[in-house]
Image (cartoon, rainbow, N blue to C red):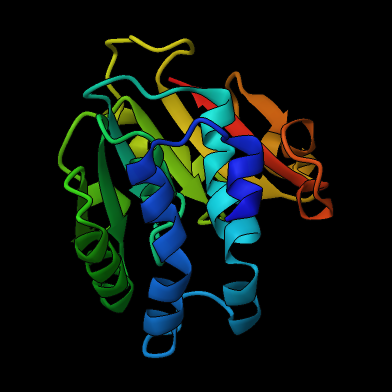
Length: 206
């Protein structure tokens, strides 16, 4: 928890409690349904929770904002963001049903009423969203193609609605395929830990 408090010192008691409970919840469920590596359970707060919260360094989701998390896996980045932004609405989808089972269990244990989990593909998501968030699910060009028609044109945030994708490594080839404007945020500008040295957020405004 210390690493979360280091970068987000203004947590409410409710947020602090929910973040603090994540490690035991994921240790419990990961033993039954493997959604993250065993090593990463030990590094949950750095490699999963804080990594997810990097998006909160780029944009503060407004009250009643609607966010789609594509390929959420065990709930990242959606669950940490839902804790951080309790007034926003999060729709977490994954094509693997057992992963959604974990998301539903964690969400219920934390009483996160602003999260809806669904076993489906991105193309089947049924709403208009302010932002689509994702972590290492697919290359950015096909990903954007799946979701571009699901992003609302009503912009109320500090940046235009669009896709915020957590990625890592050399993205030159991947980004050269995307024939539209984008911006890359380097996570080492936000967090000093070595893990974030090659980590990035790719932002594609709609």
